[in-house]
Length: 288
Length: 178
Image 1 (cartoon, rainbow over the protein chains, first blue to last red):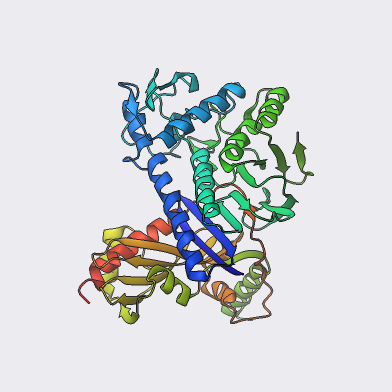
Image 2: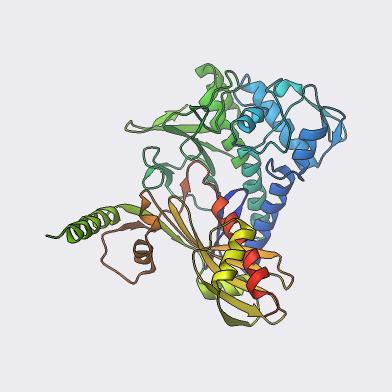
């Protein structure tokens, strides 16, 4: 058995792919390169940072006219609005104007006031999309999770028996699952890790510790409660295990911002997912 | 004890205190593997480059990124492409990476070769970084090399983007036409 382990800076973070199989190293490496290419392709399509992406086109135009988009992007929007509906708005991809205001996302020259929400995203036939309000949407971690899932499918199709794809914490494993997942310790995220049981093939973690900053004397982070418009700046993390990374990443926000435990449980159960909440100095909380 | 000696002792004590922390190190590609991954089947020739003070200033001005070293670790491929091995220092991380350029100076690929992460500010200290190369075994840094499946909030790769921008300008100023 041969193993190839590579890492590239993609999707604004570090993406690691590790494959083990009977094929020789150069052959495995070619498959890994294809995986990275696919991730880069999805990033280019769904990037908020890139003014030339299809997502940016949507943000510029969809309030004025229906915009035809790539089926992959349309399907993500469909999945995102379904999760918003199920979580009663705890997950909402329209919080981007807040992040633009706080300097956590580029404005691309637009001055947007937070208005509207996920209900103003209208998905039309022929993979067209229109906005009922002047929205800015950011798929964020959901796009990253989808990129991991897609690269994984490509590598599985190449007949590789053991694969790990990890995009900055959105991690998916094919083959034998290790017994434990290492999660950054929220108390010292650069230094320590805590280990929790691996509950499904995909895991994603959300926490504020890497994006905390001050905006007008107020602490802000990239995690925004759609209900209040306030940033989550707590010293903890939420890890979700699910069938795929896309759902796992989106569900971390559902766990963080659900208005009631019932809504949270309903969403986790619908996606057959489970979660682990880590708070510094306290034992982990496992949900459900 | 003279004041200067006292300060020297204090600095040494602080440094020893700092390096006893935990750190995480991940190695992905050796130099050989980086070369064969980015230029498969091609023969690369080392081209030693030392930047003049003027060139460093020019690169800094064009890229907006500080030039830390006058040495460029560069290799040229048969068709005029380039491989540059360099590193970037973040607030908590020190990263070696390999950049492949086409003969026209555009990015062909970027591979992370090794990644070292720590909590403290000692990442800025070259002596501390040297501890990870294996030259100084027995040092009190506890290195976690076995943590493979790690999840956490997304760590930004913006330093690599800056490093690539600096190297693209380095090609323009010092490598083009060599």
